[in-house]
Image (cartoon, rainbow, N blue to C red; front, side, top):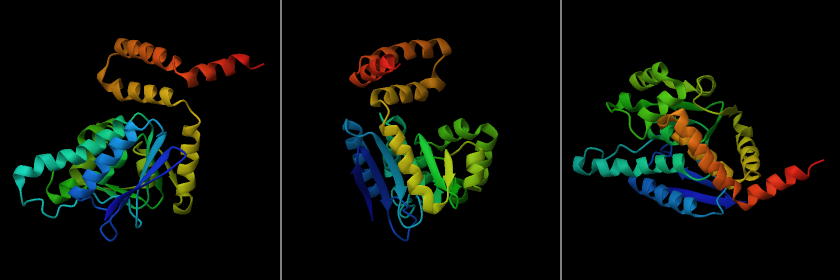
Length: 248
C-alpha cells in the first residue's frame, strides 16, 4: 500500500498502489499524495505529472472502511482528498490521468481534475457515491457539469451508472482512448509534446482557463494581458520569439 513516484526528464509519474483493493485510497495514501503533489508543484524542474494506478485499475475511490467510526473527524479527512484534487487542478504544469480499468468515486474525480485524461478502451468510470448512500464529494459536483453538461451530470450523479471509455470520450469527459497495450506510449507521446513547450506559457494558459468560468469576457481579456506580459518576459518566450523572427 503506497503512493509511488518516478521522475524522468521532468515528468513525474505517480502510481497509486494498493493491490487487491482497486487502489482505493486510505487516509495515509491521501496524505502521502498531498505531500507529493506539494513537493512537485514547488519544484521548477517539474514539467508535467502523470497519475496512474497499479494492478489493472486506476482508483476505486476512498476506502470507506471505518467511515462511521468518528464522524466528527470526517470533514478533515475529506479535506485531505479534496486538497489532492485541487492540487492537480491548480498545479502550475499540465497534469495527466492515465486510466486503465476502474475509476470510481473519488478516483473518478481525481482523474477529472487533471488537464488530460487518457484512458484504455477497457476503462470504466463510475460516480458510485449514490450507490453507497452518499452524496458527491471530491469535486464531482463542480467537475461533472463543466465537462459533460448539466443533464448528463445529473444522470451520472443520481444513478451511479458505469460509463465506458468510448462513451466518456463522446461526452467530453476524457481526452483520448487507446488500447491497453498502447496506453503508456500514448501518454509518453503527450508528455513529450508538452515538454517542448514553454513552462511559463503553459502555466499562464492553464491559469486563464481555470478562471474562465468565474470571469466576464472583459475580465478575461485583462487577465490575458497580464499573463501575456509575464510570459513574454520569460527567457524561453524571448528565445522562441527571436527564433520565429529569424525564420526565412
